[in-house]
Image (cartoon, one colour):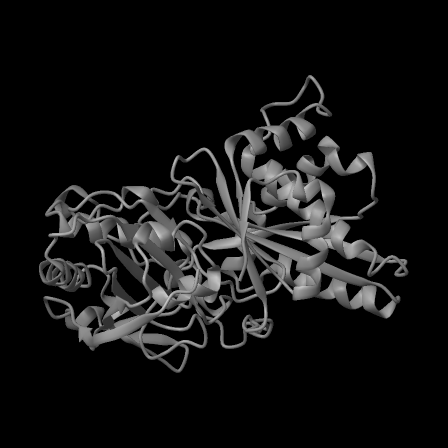
Length: 436
C-alpha cells in the first residue's frame, strides 16, 4: 500500500559523555575501503496500545541513543578524507515523523513494498550524508511505531549493525552492564591501503527493482530435499536452508538470464557469498568486534537447463565458495590484497576478450541474527524489515518472525525481474511476494 509520512522534527543526538582524547582518531581499515558507500537499513515495527505516550517513547529512544553512542563513539563522528573518523561527538541524526496515510501498522506490514519501506528511514540509502548513523521514529495514527535505522556501510558490516541494535535496546532497558563492550580492532588487523585497487561504489544503481519474496518453512524444506536427494551417503551434514535457497536462486537467476545470453558461447555465472571473518581469524574475534569484518567467497556456475539444476553439485559449489575464505585468503587480505575480487575481475576481462561474459549474483544474509529480540522496553517487534537494495543482482535474506522461513529481498533490472517471475520453478517455490 502507499505510505506517506510527514516529518515533525529533526535534531542531532550527541554522546552522553565526551569521547576521550586518545579515542578521537578512528582509522578506517582496508576492509572498510572495500565496502560500498551506502547505508545499511533496518526497520523495527512495534505494536503499542492506543494510550501509549509517544513523547515518553521518543525521549526514551533519544536518551538511550545518547548513552549507547558513548560506547559506539565512531558513529557520532565524521569521516575525513575517506581515511579516518574524527570522533568529535558532533552526533547522529534523529527525526520524528507521523504516518499520515490512513492505515494501521498492521496494514503497513501486511503487503509491504520495499520502496515504500524507505519512507520509514531517515536518509536515502545512497549517497552517504555527513552522518554515519541516522534514526527515524515513525508514529502510526492508531497506535504503533516503526524505528528506522541507517548505519553507514563504510564503517559497519551487517553483524556490527545488529550488535549495535542489540546493545542499544539493552541500554534502553537498563541492562547494558550485562553485555560486553564493542572492540575496535579492524584497522590494526587490516591496515588502510593508499591504493586498494578497487572502486566498490561503481556498480550502485538507483534504478534497480527490488521485490520481497517470502519462503515459508515448508517451501524451504521442499527446496532443500530436491538437493539432498542427489547427495551421497558420505555427506557430512544436511544441506542448510541458506545453502539450498542460495543454490536455488542462483539457478533460477541463471535460467532467467539464459535465453538472453544463450548465443554467448562463454557465459559464466558467479554466486558471491558473504562470510563473517570474526570466527575465522586466528585468534577468533568476538561477535561484538565492530567494523567491516566480512568478505565474500564465490563459486562459478556453468548453467545448463534441466535436471542438473537440482544436483547436489550445486550445493557443493556453494559450500566450496564459502570455504575459500580460509587462512591463506585472510593472510592476503591482511596484506592488502583481496585475491577473490582480483580473480573475478581478471576472469571477467578474459571472458570478455574471448566473446563471453561473467554475470555475478551476490547474496547477503541477516538470518539467525537476534533481530526479533530488539525490545526497547515495550515488547519485541512484530516485524523487522530491510528496504530497497542499492545494487542489481543482489539478494538479502532475513528471517521471518517465526524464524523458520526466509524473506528474500531480490534486486534486479526490471526486465530480468520479469523473467524471474515468469520462471515456473520459481513461481511454485515461494508463498508471497511484494514488489518495489
